[in-house]
Image (cartoon, rainbow, N blue to C red; front, side):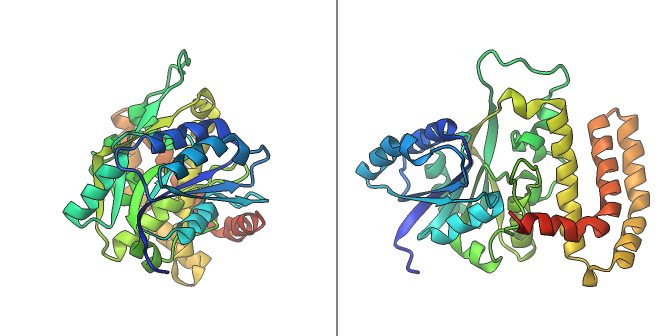
Length: 319
């Protein structure tokens, strides 16, 4: 397919037409307008298209090519993003969630960064946007737990052991189209679907790109404001998000192991056990309890994944 355009914004949405309107409005107010906006309605049970028809018309009047696709059944965020990317005809692909508001210079900053530093994938800054009068739990700290709701990746970036897949959040990142082709896109069995928090499709793609030698950058001026509603920061959801993050990492590690041998995989887990125990003790001594719990969850799940891997894939393939 010939690349006839420059910048495409890709948005997957599910049952959030009100928030999607805000997202699209923020795209419409960009200093540098995109050439193309692709919207994938991932099996919403509420009507979406007619609720955003006026904004789509405004975009088209400004010369933006808007493409709207709808799945009758929910396929998941990974599959929806993959579909949207392949439907694009642009050189640069920008991914934004349907509950994120783009800063007015987002696209302009991305393009300047691509042209100025020869980056292949760029992570933008994700800041929280809380509704007015929202009541926060006493334990909530976005600087510690923000990664579980995809905000404050600038804090994650300061970690001494950070990898690109840890600070590239799916609600705000961009890539060159050739990267998508080289790494064969998102894995469609990853990505949140039917209320599950088994995400990580963007982290997996970035990790594969990183190990292939593509340049991953971070740009603090490419800002989105991720809307954080009270239901996202309940104790139950945060714990589930933490466990799901560990589960995805274990699933991907097991998927890439030699012949997916249970015995070899478990031996590998036992080899890294001393390191995990030391890190657990170290974090407990320093009072970093969230990190301790995360490491403990991750190790336990690593041991269980070989016995649940096929059942998880069966669940994902049935969506």
